[in-house]
Structures are given as C-alpha cells and as structure tokens.
Image 1 (tube, rainbow, N blue to C red):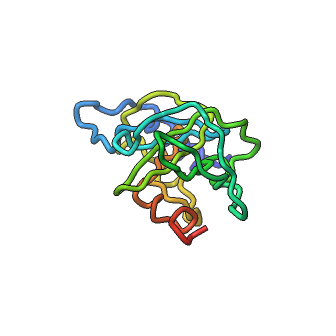
Image 2: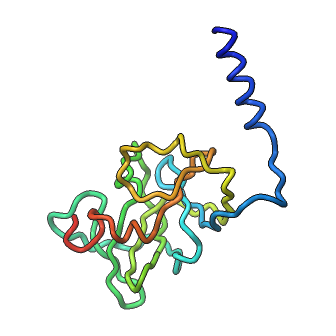
Image 3: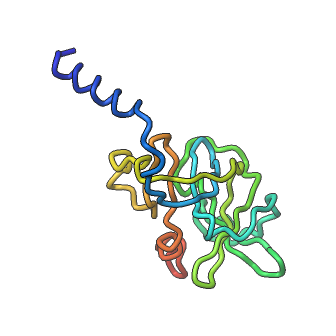
Length: 166
C-alpha cells in the first residue's frame, strides 16, 4: 500500500472514530428501526400508525412479489409491501411483523422480520457515499451503520406502490 493511501486511510479512520459534540448535532429524524432480511430500515415515527403481528395476506393475482396482496386491519383492506422483496434483500426469513404506515390519507402495511426499537438519526450519521445513485427506491439516506431511512411521501408516490404503478 502506498504511503499516500495509507495516510488517507488513517485520516479517515481518525475522523470516523471521533465522537461528535452532541450539543451541536442536528437531528434529522426519529425513526422506528425495523429489520427486513439482513437489512435495517428506519421509518419516521410520525408515519407509523401501529405495529402488528403478521396476519393472513389475501393474495391477489398478477401482482409483483413485493406486493403479496392485502390484509384486513381494523375493518379496512390495506395493501402489503414486503420490504425485503422490494429492496432485493437476499434470503429473507418469513416476515413476522406488519408496520402500518400512512401518508395523506393512504395506508400501507410493510412486512418486516422484527422491530428493533426507536432511534434518533442525526445529520452527521448519514453517509451519502453509501447510497447507490442508480437505486430507484425512495430513501432519505443511509446511516454509517447501514440503516436505510425510508422517504415515506416518496414511497407512496413510487410507481411500484402508487395506484396503476405496479
């Protein structure tokens, strides 16, 4: 390894190892942390209605694999989005939880493996270089520990999810 490259790596390692001054950190979001397959996701708390055990899904014909069908929640039929399938997470286990989210009067049930809790996400945790520019999925960003922050309004507008899109 060249000296220049080794020095660049040392500088980066020192920068990543330093703890930021928490009094000056800018909070980006408070999220519910979810796991779908081996991938971590963060959904803004204000977009989450309820977390429920997985229910039987009424499968509908000719839907893509990431939209397995609909579930009944409190008397309403809600479309289901399998996050692991949609983000192409390899070998996901069977989902155990439905995270019911909302935006502008619409609802969607996200199939996930588990709920990990709540988390505050700060601007200095986001790593723009980790987001694949070719990824067409609606994300606000990714943290340095690889949690994808979902952009809920963009999710509801996405052609894979919006009426007539899939």
